[in-house]
Length: 429
Image (tube, rainbow, N blue to C red; front, side, top):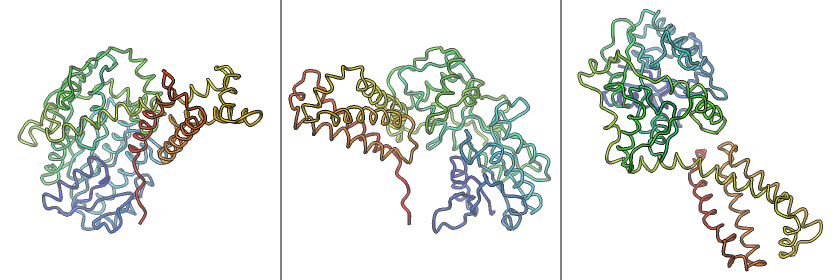
């Protein structure tokens, strides 16, 4: 069969496209940014909401459509209504008009009559459109999906390796996570043996468990020593923290995702066991032994990198505050005199350096990703410059018992680590 998979660059869509190819199907990948020279791809941007008339000629000879487009949080140029509701609705109507035999919509557990979040409501809107059309297939509603490269998997791995995890209700809310391999196997089965009309199929793990138990099983699977320690936290404080985290670059958390976590994610109507003819794998088997250490290290980096950034930002900002007058200004002038700076030049150096420190502190917290590699290099250059200058003119500070200069060495190593962890921009061809 010839299968169009939209959202094929995403976590679920990529896995579905790969599995269908492994089964011998011809897969057309719907992508916003097809790689140069790629074959069997369709350039499509759901954010532009392509109309059904646009889809009709492009669905020629397509037997099945799997829609796996989805975002967890809205961002500039991508919103729930366009990506989850309007664009899929147009695609589904075009499928019915073009004679596409089967459509599989990857929705989400919770996109039902009790939905409250904008995420679930937008998913449900597209699901409802599909249910009205004379097509075969299914609305697949996965629970929390775990797998290598998954955004939610990275989040839960990070929580699992925390030394102490403050969480509302001690993590007693029920979840039923499903492994990506089982989810994909279920979708492939629906593609190959579709229901005669659109059915709603919930895909989840073997049984509901408390979130705390899930994280404990992940912690054990990651080979992390010690048990998971959870500190009960008022839900109001958790929501407040999530609202603040929403402003951090790359954060998965905001007020709405926090509410979804607090609501839990479990079902009594799991279609996966009967569809696969076996029980889905349990969370204790999610992490393959051969990937355990690499996954653990990535989780530790994901957990502590924001902490390192916050500590570095504090250092820059506190240094600026001290330089602006918390430390006696006369003492600062005396230090500057030791390197040959006097009068207006010394004043400019003192307050100019303090302003630069403050700017570095703010940017350490809030700089967009495209700036950060240059930011870390600028910080390294400044600290290295200070170190050289003091070594030449005030070398006695190398022998100070509190190590005010020698501490620059681990600081440079920390910033070098942050620089190395930044993703590199793709090379232009």
